[in-house]
Every structure is written in C-alpha cells, then in structure tokens.
Amino acid sequence: PAVALAQVPPRYELADLRALESAFVDLAGKVRPSVVAIRTYQTRKPVEDHAAVRIPHSQGSGFIIDPGGFIATNAHVIEGGESILVSVHDGSRYAATVVATDPRSDLAVLKIDATALPAVRFGDASKLRVNQWAFACGNPFGLANENGKTSVTYGVISALNRQMTDRLVGGDPVRYYGNLIETSAAINPGSSGGPLFNID
Image (tube, rainbow, N blue to C red):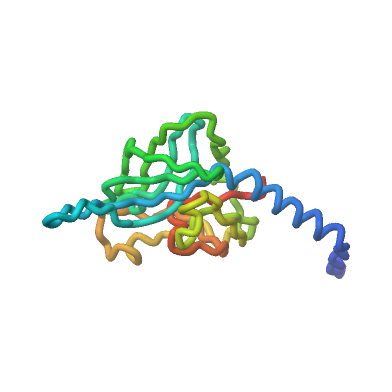
C-alpha cells in the first residue's frame, strides 16, 4: 500500500515574523480610530444647600457605524445611565443621545454631533472559520475614557455558533445570547460593546 509522508513544515525566517507583526500593527492603526470609549453618568439630586452631582454609572466601548456620528454598542453599557459621554480616538468628547435599543439582542445605537468619522467596514460572519485570527478592540477598565485611545488584543476564533442564553441569564427570555463567536482574544470589563475584527 502507498504510504503518505507527512509534509515537513516550512521554516519561518525572522523576516516572515516581522511581516506578520507589521500586518498586526497596521491593522491596529486602521481599526482603533473607529472604536470609542463610552461612559455613562447618573445625577445625584441636590441635598439641602448642595448642588446636584454627576456620578459615574457605567463604562464600555462602541464603534462608529456611520461617519455622521452613529455608534453601535451593547444595550447593557448604557442601561440606567442618565447621560452618556463618548470619547473618540483624537481625544474629543461628545454627549451622546440614544437612537434605539434592543434589549433582547443587547444592542444599542447612539448618536453624537460629529461628522467625517472613520466608520468600521463590516465583514461577513458566515465566512468565519475556527482558528482564524481575531482582534478585539475596546475600552478595558475604562482606560480610554479620557483620551479615546482604545486597546487592541488578539487571539483566534475559538468556536462558532455558541449558545449561552441559559448560562448567562438563567432562562430569562429578556436577553438572547445565541449564535455567538467565541474568541481567545482578551476581553475585559469595559470592553463590552466593542467590535471583533479579522485580519482584513
């Protein structure tokens, strides 16, 4: 019988690794300007002779979906906030209004008074394959709240079509977490609402 010989893996030179690293650096430079930091506040009512105080309520991430100032995020990022502040990549900060929310899919769209913003380019999730590179971009721990400089992490697509509704919300039908993309890219508190990119 014929014997199939295993192929010897190619030897990668340092130049190959530098080219890969350069591609990762270029990708971060392209996507970070499209990702924003989101901070919400509540107003503590005045007590006796003290003025009203604005106190931080939550923080998260979002991404520009239209150059005219429309931003997508998670609904839970803005839930319960009385005012919303968005920091963009150049350090500018804008008050945001809520355009729409969909609690079931945990999505929200915000609007800021800005133009000519760098919007993301959407990919085709149906073409994803397990173990492809994946890059998460967002505002972990609120580190981008002041200057808008979001963080990038990378990993791979670990699995597709994950179903988490029962695990995360105990069967509560308010939210649906199905058909999810699982990734090994580091995602920390504050990263909610941020996008996942591929190498393209």
